[in-house]
Image 1 (cartoon, rainbow, N blue to C red):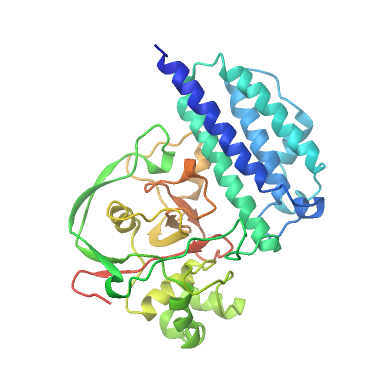
Image 2 (spheres, rainbow, N blue to C red):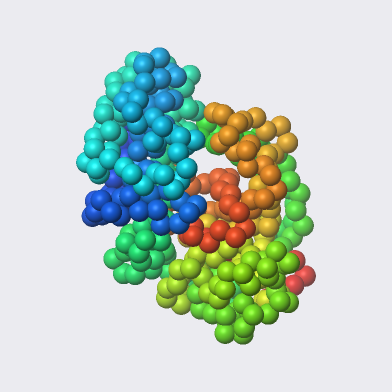
Length: 369
């Protein structure tokens, strides 16, 4: 009989190999200039994210678990999260050199995995797998910002799913009552824990994210020029930025993508609805599949649940419990499966629109639009 330890080891190795293949596929056809380009002040170059994946894996597994000395210490300041400002991360080794760095680290990591007490370390290994998923999606975002991959174009790797026609059943009724929010499985991030009971009144939620066709009505009605729909902060932001449409645009039946929380909130008010709370979104996801479309803004500020305990270090989540970041749910078409589940929590400042973000709307049970 195969032991549980052997099965877990095999599962981890298989998942890590699959994830790495998907990560490397993102850079298959890019040149060195693209590899090093900082597309936006808030985002590091694609090449930095690739090196950071290797650095983090070496730090947590080879140094902290296995007790090995630092591997290739010349890369530590370059690829550490707190090593260099984002603007200084553009002077990178050649693409093949960084890919070799990943391979060297991974080979040593798998050598250690063969003898590691994985049953005791499982949470850390799965955290690292999701860490790579998150940075790989950021790489996809940077490529979209550079223009290497157009969102929604046929054949593009950044191609969101089309949505169906639900004109007769645009919204679904979620019954009132309690549900269990959060996740305490071994894969769950610290901010998903602990599970807790939440009571919600009945409400309606969109069956699908708001589409480009639907959002166009807001643009054509002058929504970006009408103070009525915006929060005070949102109106100030839109006036200063001069923005008058989403960052990414595509076919009518594709979820609108590349909108800030301010834009999502303004549209929801324009159609007489509102953004869901995180709890409303998560409960609704038990009634219909809401994963892998676009990241979806909620009205909830990112914070820890009661009883929160940081893992594997306070800076992963706790630093952002500042009532300045809004929660997004659902993952996007660019999110790898190991980081996609109903309880997963993403968080960004409300003005951020560079990510693959859209939204659903909700309204009270007594109203249906």
